[in-house]
Image (cartoon, rainbow over all chains, first blue to last red; front, side):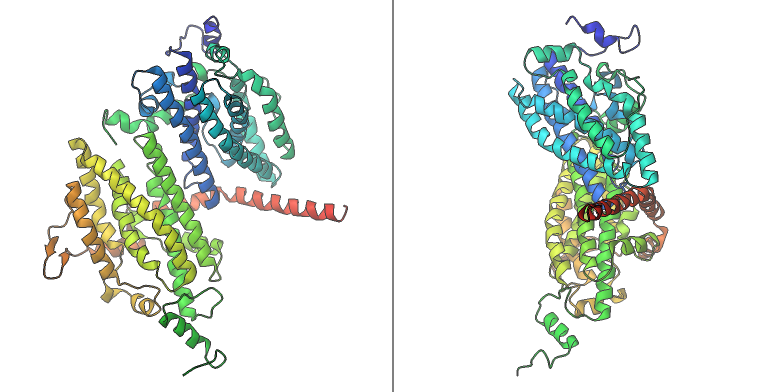
Length: 269
Length: 321
């Protein structure tokens, strides 16, 4: 693991990631975390959507991401071999042990913010799952192939909304642009690899995220221009999710999500 | 004796369909009272599904396991789907969904009072599935035979999903009752709070019910409130016994002469208080619903504006503009 210090460099000087282990386990868990945290965010929309059809759609998205998270956690638990279940991994790790990208933990904001977050992440997952469909790890490949089908629907849903809102009314245009501006600083992290990814690429299991960037930019800029919007030219990109250096939002999200397992430890539900 | 359709009046043809136990369809003539009753009832049913998303949605983000979370999201999603389905059935009677939503927001139309109680613990999600969905199914199975075709057909599909929900709710209760003493106490507390409101879901006694007689004659309603309530009690008591939970009614006991369970009197003061808007959560539920609707207005406006622009663009490209 020669690139270990590249990881820590994204967190403050002196901080050390609190996780360690089999790269495959870490690889599966980080993607599971992405999907779980986004599912949790989307599920917060239920009963708050702009119309009933969208309540159904957002719940559907939440279910899809949750389903992928569960499959990945379960497999990660098997790989780790210590008997941890999907719930142990989801409910009993701390803020510093979660390795999701910062984008997915950002609050829902208004519907435009949520759709901007979704566009960025859906466009990323299209490339990710496509690449991982041919993973040398058959289990991961199977999960990816199924997720790819869902990702195509997700991307259609978010891109359609971004275009509608961008090219809708003056107010929706303003809100959609604000959503894109607010979340742009979290997209760079999607494409920066570390030693975990390097090990997975070498094993033919994973994908180098930097190879996903070009197609992502094409997809997103196509949607953004159809929506009569633009992306900010601020080069600043915030990093740290993959080493557990999160925004302040994640702790609150976990406090809510993990409440039952923390308050009533070791029970069956 | 044969009568040609030219010689019978629309009212006679309507009655003949009802008498023959066939379905009234949207294009058939129907008495204005029949139409109004159905709009009121189907809309109230649709509103109940939509408002019902709130108390259960309250536990989605805190569900104890990922599997429970997935099941609960899917359940609440089903409720939104039922709402859509029922609004569509109401629209066949000549009203729009937007009009009905407006009537809900102004308080002119109601939703089931059961949703004016709060979900305080995880066990409430089990109790709602078991008792509230159980009571709803008792009513809805009857409605699969209601005389208005679109409503009856909506009910067939909804009943299938509801019975699935009820089994899931019962399964949550079973897990709690087989768990630690703390979990069992949580289950008992939930049943204590939900049992009587579930019985209230069937409405006032037949002798007090203003709509029952006419609705029974039109075969919109096919079993009376009190009979449905008895069916529900008879079905549920053995289930509670299996769980080892006590239903909070000291007068509840098997009556071998009647072949039914006897049970105590509902607190009708509480019932009417909640109906009239003074239940624990009436105000919260409606404010939540209205806020979601108002917060979403700019999104709906944008979708409409975009659709208009697209239409104009297509028209322009057709004329070579």
